[in-house]
Amino acid sequence: MKNQQQQQQQQQQQQQKQQQLLNHHKSKKNRPKTYTHTHAHIRTHSHFHAHISTTTTILIN
Image (cartoon, rainbow, N blue to C red; front, side, top):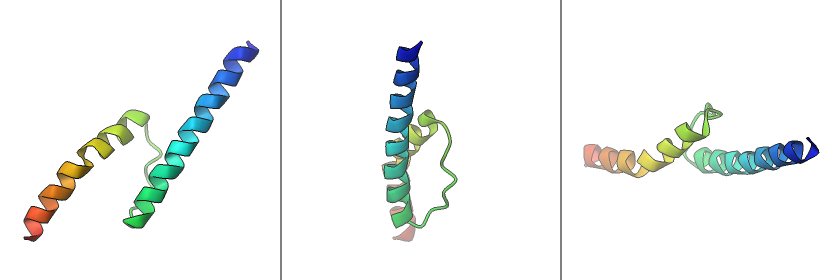
């Protein structure tokens, strides 16, 4: 039982670190901090981020 609790705490700490990094990255672009969603959503967002930015630059040009 103690082992499981320790593992869960470690996972939570890792997720918090990743969340802090994401928040720091987003704060540069002045995005609203509504990104405490699931891990999968964050991953897909970062995955499509390059695609979104390229399409917006095409629109601006």
